[in-house]
Image 1 (cartoon, helix red, strand yellow):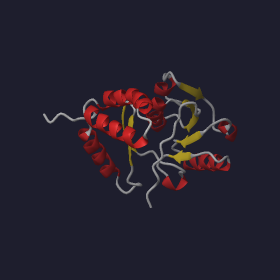
Image 2 (cartoon, helix red, strand yellow):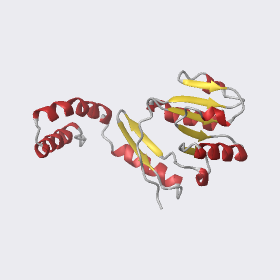
Image 3 (cartoon, rainbow, N blue to C red):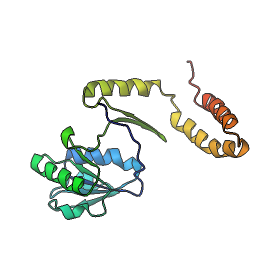
Length: 189
């Protein structure tokens, strides 16, 4: 059964990544644009991670106390036993947890993503085919208008004005749909 896609506001949230290697670095890069406070916990943390401006490094062995005041947990170590412990500790605290490369221990997954400004498209095959997810990501990216981020910024600015000018929901919806069609118009070049 496929996982339910859910978009979550991570700004003002605290994310703990247990592990300090390449996989942890990748997760930091994926999460950083969404604005969470990111904590990386490992005895050894790559210089690449330590140099990231918005990352707080906890250069120590993992202990459950580090989960205090954390909203989301990612276990990204190469130690299966440690990853299982992190997952169990997170579940006990009712925290969403992702264990890299172990879907059975995950409460949520990272799908393949396309982000362009305010646009975020998530793609998941529920593990059936990462290659298919990559291919679909490429196809979707190619189908997007070249200036989709700017177009969405225009729509974001116009929406409150349209809402104030058209109190009737049906009329407002028609106007917003027309504006969207014009703003997102793809050149047929």
